[in-house]
Image 1: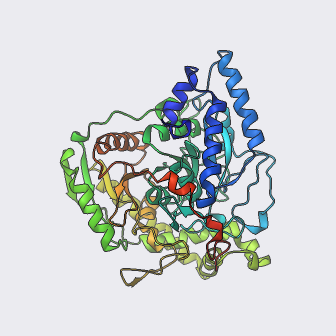
Image 2: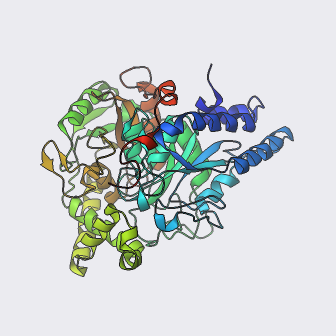
Image 3: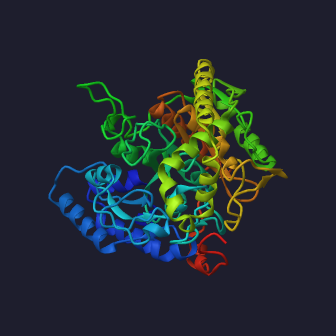
Length: 497
């Protein structure tokens, strides 16, 4: 029998609306699953069960009174620990904020609450979101739900693991170099990087930078769309949420359900590396095998890539500008309280000149323009979501891939950050497992502003691939996790050594 915590968000919301499922019953099922599994994976790191239960009781009373219900009414939601949440500890994975409890919600959290969502807890993240290995000196490491000794990726690793294990049906995340898409790929769930500005984020210190975005994570594409509909708005606190005076540009109803897309009409480009990413041989082979199973479903499927020349240099420099804006004062006054990834970024960032920054901005613009030309002849691009299969989380980052040294601690994320630089929306969709038995993620990249379109493509692919055990979404062994040893007992669990 399916437990309430294992229902899709869409189905759980439908049952709540029909009074067939109580918000209290759903929350208790989610809390019980967290209690039973989180010792093995360390995904949900801050909780206030009393407040969550009170919110669920209020939600249940509203249902029984026959009130109008929001899109997320009664659904438990996990919030990434980079996003301030009123009354619930928010640390950014940093010892400097170990005991920080915000007095106000980030607008994203406020919008989720307004839509009826119940905040179930905060999900683990690397310190300040730096890197794709969810480890920090406050809460320790997060393990992959398919093998807790392996990396869950990041920086939204806690959210991905909480979803995969059924601790919550929906989670928030954020993405700069693939922080939504990378853990989605490693953990077998869906992550969506929207067009900058679609989901407003007043928390970005450099409001005009298009690199970092907030976005939704879920187990299915329809669930993800449901959460996205509660996140979008024309909030003027984010300068990238540009609008037209007197008109509403970002409407919840445009994203609440996936568009219906006919795959047979699509012109698709398929590339394992965007022409520059250090994709390991194993992932190249798996990607070729997976896409061979469904290439025939499209109108055309060409092996092609947009020209991504200069992507590494542009991302390294522009990412560093963001780090200087966010962390220069902490680096100057408290360098010993910063982890190795943040320190490494600051050390390299402070070496760049104004000329370097100008050149990086020009390279990004040129890449963007080449992408627009490329998309004249194709509708979507398919790539692997990430360059490698999950490795042990004790490896802070991959120093080499197939024997070749990586450029930086985030070079292995280049399949994701090429898309970040172009500013296009992208989904990571789970497509079975790789040769090591770990989840494999397919990145689906849409055209400029094509958020609803690319989600429709992902939903159509998801529905088609679910019929084949080689391509359907993998599910971790919950019973095995329940009986697993605590991840906190593993060597090097806390911190970075």
